[in-house]
Image 1: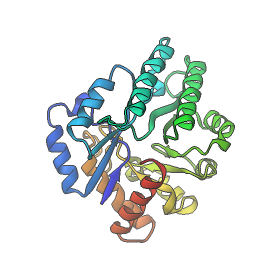
Image 2: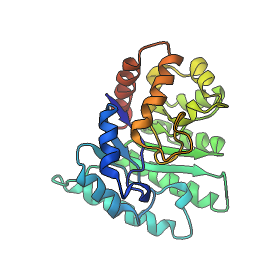
Image 3: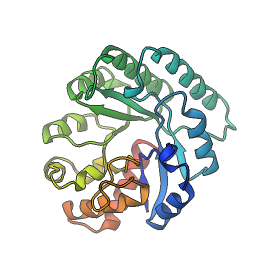
Length: 263
């Protein structure tokens, strides 16, 4: 059985056929799906979707770096109130499995770079304070990411570096943080991707988790379509070739890894 550690199933792309999407995921062997947050405005819908599928969909809470704007402090205050109330209420029907999706993204625009860094550090501190994992997004920000993570190396942080597609050197830098995994998704299957060679040379199987990032980055042979959790088997199949093992071994080990670092 497979865990999809990152799927935006609360998004508008799934509002008309979520039940069908989940049935296909279950038929493909996906036994749990983790759903990241992106901002305060989307939290009610995210929590409602996960409540309706409690035990199968598990929410995260956090402010995505691309959502960091002038009002980011207000966003963080609101998100933290939701997190704090859920932790205080022992009978709450919502359990956040991680602080995420958080991080740094300077790909399109770095005009909020200072604010992104501040928001990221505040949310790292939430994770450290409440012993929660991190789901970390980083694009065009490897150096800044590693520099920030070094500051918190002694805080026993754990989690996932989501959507990894970097070099062997970048993999080694991230794997130097012992309780973190690399999230591997559809990019692995792309024709020009160098990720298969990077994994083969620099990343042991016990340091990766499977993810889709649905509705984005659908794997081959679904590239160009809306991604969904059932497509995760395409990534798992290629991983079985890279690591020279059965797909069942990929499912078993990546599930174990997910249970260790984020669930």
